[in-house]
Amino acid sequence: MLQCIFLLSDAGEVVLEKQLSGHRVDRSICAWFWEQAVSLGDSFKQQPVITSHSHYIFQVFRDGITFLGCTQIEMPPLMAIEFLCRVADVLNDYFGALNEDIIKDNFVIVYELLDEMIDNGFPLTTEPSILREIINPPNVVNKALSIVTGSNSNVSDALPRATASCIPWRTAEPKYSNNEVYVDLVEEMDAIINRDGGLLKCEIYGEVQVNSRISGFPDLTLSFTNPSILDDVRFHPCVRFRPWESHQILSFVPPDGQFKLMSYRVRKLKSTPIYVKPQLISDGGTCRLSVMVGIRNDPGKTIDSVTVQFQLPPFILSADLTSNHGTVTILAKKTCIWSIGRIPKDKAPSMSGLLVIESGLERLHVFPSFQVGFRIMGVALSGLQIDKLDLKNAAAYRFYKGFRALTRAGQFDVRS
Image (cartoon, rainbow, N blue to C red; front, side, top):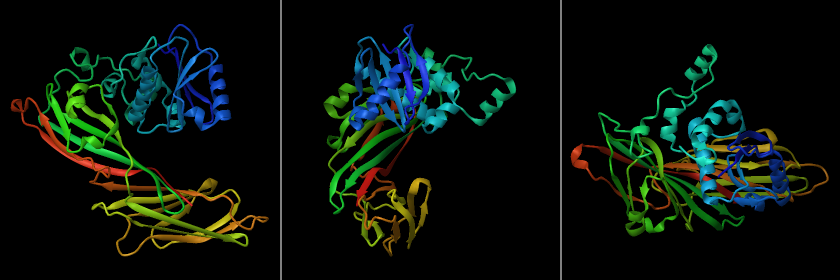
């Protein structure tokens, strides 16, 4: 069982501490962990399970927050790691984002959620739809009421409807006038492109997100036309594993409302939808920068929300950058963002300008990498396609179903 959970900021500060059992874990374990993380670097942070002189430590990193689980007792490591992932997912679902400021602004709700999610070190209630019935999500009305009444509690007085249900993730006998199910394929493309334009890595991380509003206890099956391309699949607890193992069919009784049915990866893709060609020529204390962006493989849908972001080297004194499409903004800490939006069909967007190098240096010795963002509605670039969605007891009532797809850039880096 877990004995304590710590949330650390990206500077190593303890943002939140939750003791889970009678044995108190001292905060000094966090100082030891951070010293090891600083001295060993990324190789240490990539280890999900760490053994200290006195504790087993489990770590999950999300959006600048490190979730640490500590125990002195041997336990299944996957259970601890999965629970920390669930905590991160629930906090992100409640607050819409996850960072140090959000956690500090919602200390009460975070502690109330942890009280419901784990009991004496053992996971208890981790389903977001049920937690929402127990702990009210933060909103303007709740904050105003807490100021007027002086009460900070967000815990509901009534038991969740799932208490009377035979299925722990679904409320008892929900009823809707219109029964409907919507399935979204949401994918992120991670890619690394070298300075010569060669594709070093290209893969997709995807999620099947479902919004189910069906009365009673529906039994659904979802199938794909090409499930063999999927790797590293991870399922919601409602999915029956045996039909997937034998026929690659998702058979499940869905939670009520919106939830993540499964996640997956598709590896070794051969191309990207857009190209980014940076060029830097430095001499005589200045550097001329030019970047071109265009469509490499037309996905058949509009590519929009295109951005190119990069960090100017610390020895750059000033930068004068212009573009023929979109806007160029230089933020604090020398972060440059080129917002292109939608790529026009009649011309390739380009950005160029002059960088002034500090005295004593004739040319660049450190070259920036470019982070690219984009969004494509209506297409899954992995090639994954939904075949059909069936309801086993469809004769009992009529239901509507809809499908959508979205691909956006994840860690999309272009080296210069």
